[in-house]
Image (cartoon, rainbow, N blue to C red; front, side, top):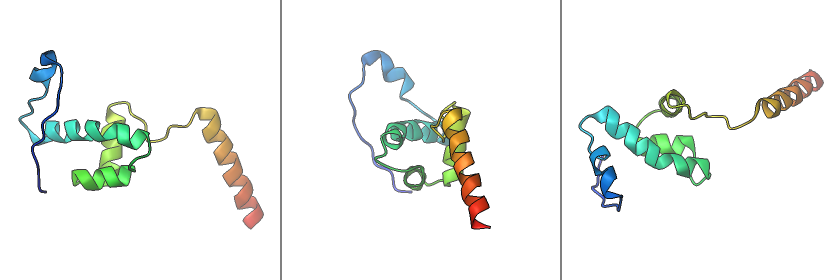
Amino acid sequence: MAMTAVSIKIPDTMTEFTVVEDEKSELLRNAMILFPYIQNETISHGKAAEILGIHKLDLISLYSSLGLSYLDQTREELQSDIAVLKKIRRNAV
């Protein structure tokens, strides 16, 4: 994967946390840079994974390991969606 160096402004006290020396840390840093763009729906998980050069499920798993859920629904919203899908399924048979 082609890489480019970029310059960003950060607080001086944050500098020590920007140096990464292994691929896993680099992937994590880059995934976290992309996460806000997934949240605001600028890009999808699939597009972010493509940018990072990994599989979508691997990216979802990475975010999940950090407590960042793939689904942003409440339990009630999810249960409502499941009920609707069950109703559609019954009517289709």
